[in-house]
Image 1 (spheres, rainbow, N blue to C red):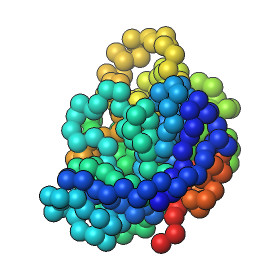
Image 2: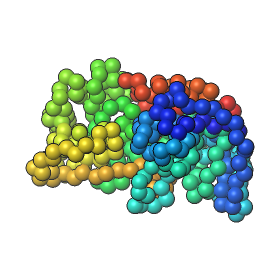
Image 3: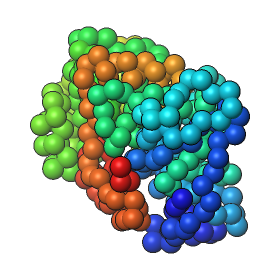
Image 4: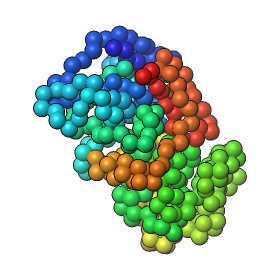
Length: 333
């Protein structure tokens, strides 16, 4: 089999190396998956550039989200048969592990390979209506967006939802919110992204490049949002709280800014709002997401698809401004 490896102390996609390794056999309670697609998350770029998610001096197979077919099962596995389409999930139950990094980080090899062996409790059936490229977007981006919207203060029809940017979690949040009967509002940093979100069904979009105090502007155009999915991090919390409707919630999923930010407690008192940290989600969240997507016929927004042989180029594309939805790497069937 083949796998892409990030050598010790390497910090760029150009350093990835493709190598041949023996095909692993699944042990008791494990399944082997013939990989058909993997997706890239923002967290993967942080691991790539380090030191986040890296052990100094250790090589690493990157990426955490995979879709494919079961091609071998270990002793005692009865949940899946060879040939079934599956994807992976990350946490069984709450609270999530600490640190909540999962596959493709620290000492956990990732899934950028032609085959992977996983414990059976980390494997779940793929949505019946999705292809492998689409299914590979669920484990982190899809489940994180689901947890953000429905894990607490669940979004209801007629409410108002917003998310930041046009990455995988943000666009999933838009799709799920609209399918649940909510009105969606976007916050972006470029006019082309605003047009794309409007085309995808956003009621309105705030361009934070033109309106630095975007929280107040979002509250003005929306009347206050009941849920704000913050995909950035600590730096955006004050504006996120400013945007809330009465008893709204900010679901904080982003890690891109981690520096402590000054927080005015009156922003919480004024809205009766709350701030909740979201680290992907549980197996129950994943299964609820799959059922919801099948019921509504939702298909994830895929920005671009790249062949396995060009994995470094996929990482570089993912870093470009203006990506809308998920970047996926596929393997031949």
